[in-house]
Image (cartoon, rainbow, N blue to C red; front, side):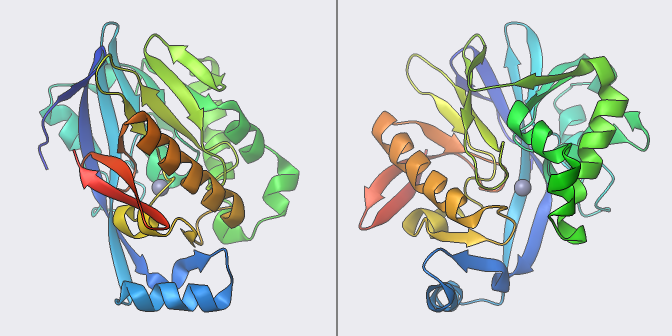
Length: 273
Ligand SMILES: [Zn+2]
């Protein structure tokens, strides 16, 4: 969907919709155990759920920065629309200066590649240090089932194809007006990016939440895709609390639009902003 640019701090920001992901609600998890999990699936009320897959463009003082890169051509024709959306915004891949990756999963990083070449010929790729460490660790790979090993292949391609244009980053200010905000659990180095503004600040929280309203109300509900479900749930509650307290606007890899957070009952609510 052709979105519109929205300003936060020194940056104008555009959401690129890459595609729409559908899965069975059987992948829901709950930190309180099987009964709570079953109750969450019942409360959802549908056998499946559908979520957007997003990445973001930041137009700032030193050119174009992206947050995540979509799926490219790797997930078939229902995905990869971020590339057309980028072109529609008048931005050529060659004019993207850097891409900040929230975590090394396919729906966020495969768009960096075109076959066995980098899709962005001039961009640096900045990856949270803890995520690249994990996804390049052979022992970590061996500890996971085959279906969960995609990130390791991506990390290998990142190192090979982006070579000296691959940079690792840690918590805190990584660029004037942008802070890396660690949100561990979904993956161990999973991170959000906080764009500081004098008025509004925006937290792009990656996959801290996949289902905005549902998981805000009950942050203990997770998805099987969280590598460490208990840690992901603690992180979810903490980031919701912090976003509410600080008045941050939030968006992310799988929620639609922008929202603000407020406490509600035992959990939180997102209001479109
Ligand atoms: Zn994701």
